[in-house]
Length: 449
Image (cartoon, rainbow, N blue to C red; front, side):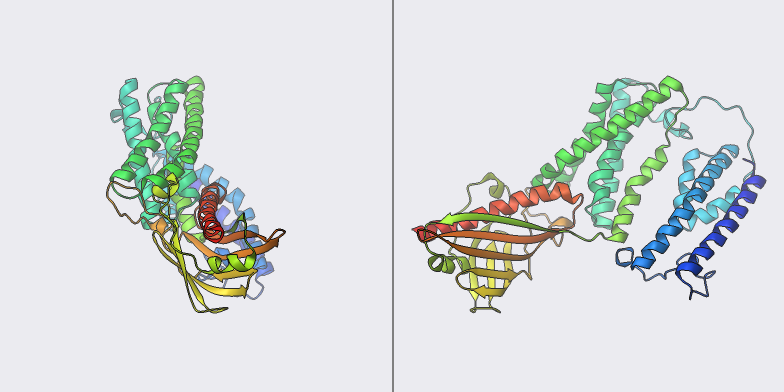
């Protein structure tokens, strides 16, 4: 694609798209008289994507739908222009970087073409000949270098997500392990095709190394790493399978190269989007019940405040998960404040419903850390221990049963801002059930004693 054609198509395409966008804006925002000046932010810079009204969401969806063919056209033309100028094709990823892309596209209009005989490039990425001297040609050497490169990339993206953006979501727990598996296999197969079993081993090792590194640099504790490990290893395996398919296709057909830089930018881009969007946390509910051989009137006092529970014997709590120790209350009735003392600190629980001896419901205004990290460095404080897992409300419900017995049910409503929620709430539900059981069993023992 020569520069004159590239510039002409770009200008004509922009003119057509600008006209279509203006028509859409007049339809959805008829009172907007300054569209030209508001083109980059037609809804204003203060509008947040998680708080859009119905018509605003429809407007942005329509704008996105109209933009899709122009995105395809711009990306295809930019790739052809890069080839004509003999620049690395992976630079087409800059097309998606705001502000920088404008300077980049203008520069492409002035780059002179370069005519040369195209040699076979190192595989499986175009424009990546710089890696020729970095990645060894031997199987063992390329495997070690692939694991090292993927681990360094993974640590950098992990620091970006947890320390800079402080997002524990899809970018960190899904995109990162998947891409690490993909990166490592593509690096490993740079010079020649590799076997499936070898590729999968190379794909999984960076995840293990990353977990050990997090433990050694005191960024995470053993419990959190073990909880994340099954999900991360599975995704790394899927990424490794895709990497194997890409390298196998390249070496078989010599015509299906993958663009590494696009994949490389995927993880930080997703982390950035999550940090910007801040998805609304879902509220989960956990209920646990037990039968007590005593009437509700006798059980009630233990529900309101119970004496110290003996130290736990369960491995879960001994490993560092926060566990309840005792409960105290200041006052009586609605407005009283209950404090449930955990191993990591107290919950502050103002009473909202005092229906003696049937229902005790309370809010939660202060949450301690959900666990003490198991680490060789003692007390470490990762960001996810503060504000990412919070109880919102709790209650004890007492139901009279025949034979002067009581069905005692504990319930907790909680939120966590760690995604994918479907995976993490399996862990949190189990932990809360164990906490409920510890309290309910203690109440039962005290009452029946």
